[in-house]
Amino acid sequence: MEEKKELLDQDERVVEIELERLRGFVNHPFKVQADSQMIELQESIKKYRSV
Image 1 (tube, rainbow, N blue to C red):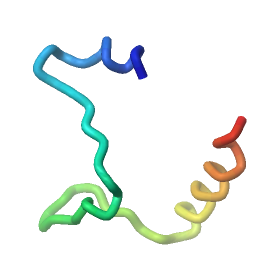
Image 2 (image 1 turned 180 degrees about the vertical axis):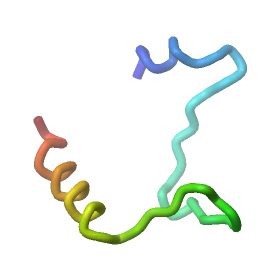
Image 3 (image 1 turned 60 degrees about the vertical axis):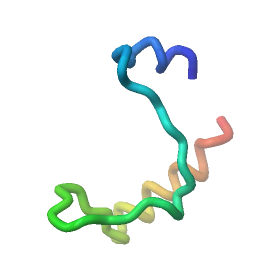
């Protein structure tokens, strides 16, 4: 985590929040789709997260 802090500008910071607090908003350019690629990504993360 320390390494990431060095990459931030002085007036930027990382804030961790609960996933439940995240909400979508109108005209957001990025959409999460629960499709086969998402399932594949989830499986990959589960497989390699403890490596």
